Image (cartoon, rainbow, N blue to C red; front, side, top):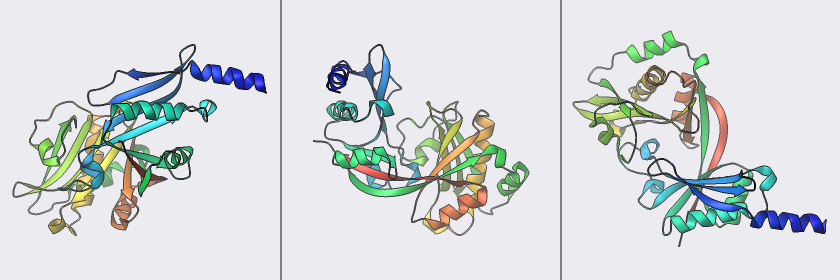
Length: 276
């Protein structure tokens, strides 16, 4: 047993934490063990604010907050690798706030608690698979007239935009994001947006739908969400799943998702850490 402990300690000292080049605005690190095995990864990316509110950013999207992802292979856990990855992140993102989303009751949640993260909320994750979509029925939802409202679409990259209006003012071009929006008298009143991630090209992440307060009760959320589901498959035919996140205190949005064919996938919790 003592020999194994010595070998384990030696192997842990040989693990290097290295920065990995990635897309602009995204930072990643790897814990690399001999002879090149990746024992863990960590990443930082800007928080996409579009799922929270149409016009006002949620607290987690205020300046100084970034989204943290961190994973250590099961056979390498409890050896300090996660702590070393977090230290590398902390050195890079000093004086910022880390926002992490972890599965309820998971090792990730225990890690957050152990390292002083503060729990700030919880979410439901729902999944829609295109093989379960009745496309003729979906087209009927999109074709329903909404007097006084106009449906529009945009495609491109989310990049550094923080408001949906910014995207609509940009010309469409090939990119990882699709936006469907409803406008009234030239003003944005409802939207839903989906982004295809670099790590999982077959699953898109949906934000919204969100509807401006004075225009609710007119099924605009259902309209733009149905249009998004239809448009996303046209632009990215390789996508076969859409994952959407919802706070647990929004029963109306949860009911809308069930109507469209989303089913419950999992629950997650949000944690936050303010870095010195």
